Length: 171
Image 1 (cartoon, rainbow, N blue to C red):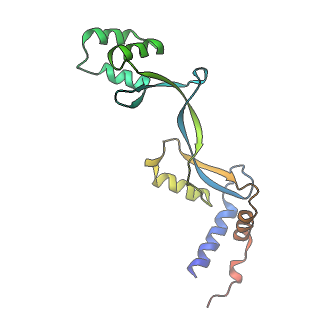
Image 2: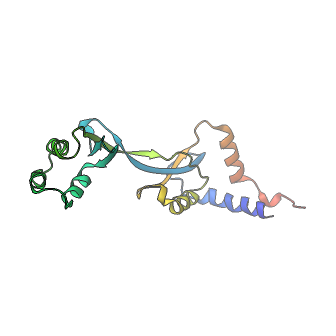
Image 3: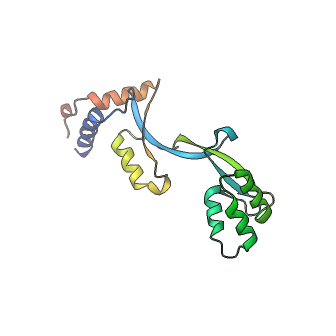
């Protein structure tokens, strides 16, 4: 009886939930954003890669942290404070004082669909994001998709949405 009630509740949710302008058969995933390497002309920000420690940092954040470094001598600190929004000067400064092989990496933010996420309802997708927010950025969101040309998925969802669950007799 619990399974039948689950299916009745799921049916109600499926037929009353928002469709987010997505055609049936629809399902939800987790949409999010990530920074990826980009062409210079498409850059929204820059990161710096430091080979000697094999780490990358967002350039502006990295420079701000360096300015707080109490062990930095006066000359490099003065030079650093004179650098204003000039990425070429910034990378040259880093190469001079931090890592001579440092690389400047242009990046842009792109929308992604998180792998291994698939939900029948928008509410379940939202709940998953809330309970697992440590795996996503603060911009994570439910993202509706169509199971395009997937006849078995379409048939299953149609059954779930239209079947008369009250017609089933339980033992």
